Length: 149
Length: 264
Image 1 (cartoon, one colour):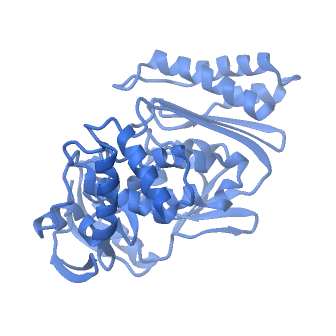
Image 2 (image 1 turned 135 degrees about the vertical axis):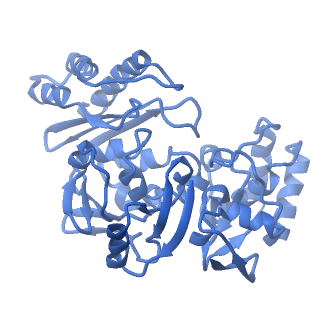
């Protein structure tokens, strides 16, 4: 069936199967910053924003997304660059595989939470795993990003 | 999981007629746990266009639309006002935000999932469910039934009563399914205790509840005895997350802790 999505501000029409997940639809249409990890909602690397809310695209049916606005990290270039800058300064980067999803979730958190505490930040990011960093560098970077503006 | 056809319905009536027409038709709710479904789905029925995601107060009840996401439930001030916000406490401990923005309260309840953190607190709040065809039924009665649901859950209704509540879930990691969870409330002088993820579906500890309500003095000894009663009456099982014996010991500790909180 055909679905209409607004991806990063552009109207798109995709032909999808009834049991196709949004992760697959996006990746096969070259939105490859959306990563495939666990494929069962555990790791968070497939995170995209659906109507502004972070969601695991590996478990969101493409048909269900019909008519919705999808944002990948390419859709927030300025904020992503800022977040990347803080990650670099705090030594929060290693393999970088989780960075796009982490940036999207942090961006959504900034819009959603007012003056989040350390616990609020950790709680918001509980579904975004990073196999390399140990999270301390990321936590410092995220706090710096949230306090900048 | 295989889906042959996806239908975004424009009315509850349409959804119900599809369900009636095929035993392989399924309401997909949020779809977050669809990957856990091995069966082939002939018609996946999507209710998301029906406005069933509101959270309101009506006639002394908090009414949560079945398509409200766990994130909506967690953030709702109305739901937070119920018994120390135990439903919100439970919702915010389920996986991460990226899952809670997908999974719906209706899908969680309809699935009667043993691993559910949400069903357990709802059971101690006298929650009732409103179905399209069947009408209203208590959550406890619904959970007790073994027949497969062939109806459409419209609303989850929780009476707005003053009371104290407590919920806790024990997990190996924050994004895992629970090893065990428990919820306790004290409303209008009555105590309710529910235990879930045993790993079977949640149940009320009826005998422990009766014991507490006949206890002359609500002290540490009463909590201790009630906890012992609960572990004697509830059946526990083993899986990769924990043994039956471990769950039993967790249950004793949680029930005691919960009772101390609501009786203090």
